[in-house]
Length: 204
Image (cartoon, rainbow, N blue to C red; front, side):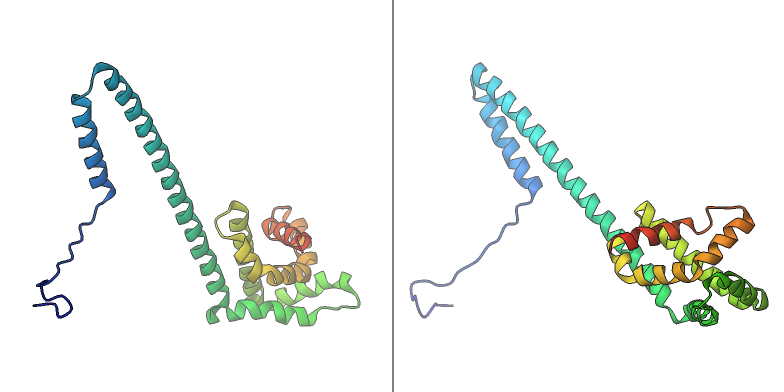
């Protein structure tokens, strides 16, 4: 079709040829090969040196970008796992577990905190479901704290969501956890959780 703005121009074709890194490398390689065969001995030595330098630079650059890609993928995976922990805690199916702590907290004697260990223990002995739900909550938070320590999840995101939860559970049940460690003769019970609570409290 004739272009009205330019009667002598019947049309225009736009041709786009994608050039990948591989194609570019092939073109450069062919160019170097042709230059190499038409060069003198001194020039060939220079070309050999230049080729070695370029090859080394390309290898270093490639390794850098591969490393960056691995780092980004690892961080993305940590965020996915962190989101999973947040979703699990917020899941309605987890309601009985979360409510167990609130139910026990209402029983505690603020005026006489030394009695709270006995109060918690009596409540748990009298209600097996309450005991199992509380242990589920503490075990879940212990698992989350272990993942933070091992770098499996993103600590900054976990801190923003779990900080108040971790501190509430530790302050409420610390005296009972201490008693449980003594009774079970195991100082490692919920240690990741209590250590994380101390660390996050000191980071305020």
